[in-house]
Picture 1 (cartoon, rainbow, N blue to C red):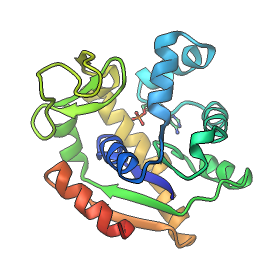
Picture 2 (picture 1 turned 180 degrees about the vertical axis):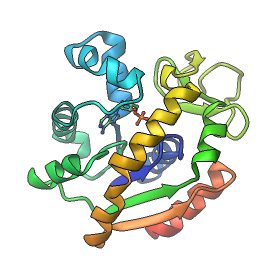
Picture 3 (picture 1 turned 90 degrees about the horizontal axis):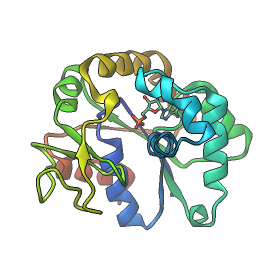
Picture 4 (picture 1 turned 90 degrees about the vertical axis):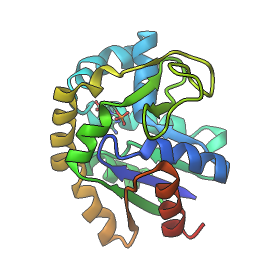
Length: 210
Ligand code: AMP
């Protein structure tokens, strides 16, 4: 399965992608996680991305397209993958088509801006492996520690309320038009975000026929 997850920042794409990855045994390619790792390691891509990511703006399309093309050519993507956070603009979606990356489904997780702003305040991210938690709806087993790798859980710099508002504005203008793009191609499915991670997963599975 080649799946794209669409939805506003904080809609739960990363969390659902991790669950689906385990269930389907295919990798999740998260451009946000790749960029954060590059920034942490101070690579040329990381240095280029930093100012955009930290102010809630989109990183230029050519940088993202390069990263994703390279990652999708790796062996573990042969049987499918989940794209989390890419494409985020119409040119990125067109670039995927141009290089022959043909996805099966674009699944959009729908959620209101108000819920996101409330929710982002409780999000915690592992400093080492980027797994996300929520202090109320998806808490780690041990407070402040990642269930996966034991790494320290931190608040992402771009999860501050002002940056979240900027990211939501960018989502509505740049990314939301992708729903129409994939709908015209008969590939769009939508689910409403639910109160718990498990309930949202149930809706996602139903939409994907799993
Ligand atoms: P995310 O973890 O998906 O919320 O991404 C965090 C930040 O990384 C975004 O706010 C952007 O600055 C940048 N980013 C991630 N994916 C993309 C993309 N496909 N295109 C442009 N910028 C991106």
